[in-house]
Figure 1 (cartoon, rainbow, N blue to C red):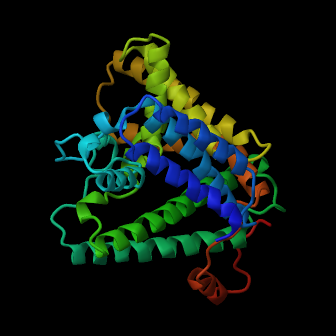
Figure 2 (figure 1 turned 180 degrees about the vertical axis):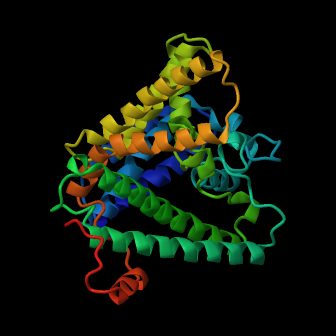
Length: 373
């Protein structure tokens, strides 16, 4: 471990300490310490690999909001508890509270906790033994490895995501659609590979059970609106602190719970924080992308409300097909600037290649090409 990675460990340790210590009016004092550590480390490049450093930077910024949620906005030891746990964790021994804090921090989606967003997560695996679960996960892992390899190979051979190609925002529409689909496939594959690997290790070692590991992504058949994409299909790793900060801000503005004003504040807060977490040094295009999502969701709500008043109260297959096309068109329109920022920062340089897809490409006739370099 390089010296510059030590602050990451220190921040995680401070988070555990802040959650494990007994409730105190002085607990909030840990938050400025954590925030100072985050900003002191924020633009260091501990690995000199743009992809890894960007991931660490995203984690640092996420730590800030997790700490704000769990230290300042939430009385965690009284408000959050695991399913089936009835005794206040504050009365437990320090060793138990430390274990409780680690489990809370390592479970950002809140699976098996009182704050689990059950309607937003895929169903939990049911009636699976550990061995059957591991075998199933290994099958999925192999599938995602293959998908990542295909995505990497297409990235290399089509020059869609290279610093020397035409910016995504200026490419023909069909290449932009291809780029959106390819970027989504690669992102889903990489995130799922990490999630599945952790699930295999955790269940294999007996740390958790199969029911604690629902799929990372929801059903793609639900992605007929942009709101559904973000709230049901995409991973919900950030959902807890996005929701808590938006709800707290709405409360500070004295907006009634359930009101349109409260919903709007929570919506924009969620996407602004998402933009902050994904922002790159001296680069604002990711922020524009995320704020645009809030505006388009409002647009969707207006259209849906008008349609319901016109008598369209149920979704037909045609309506869903139109919705899928709309979502694809929206991301094809809105994501190129975000992708260009990542490309220019070296964040999508081919990080994964096991050679299966590239070997197949070499078997094709020499005149066959998918490139627009």
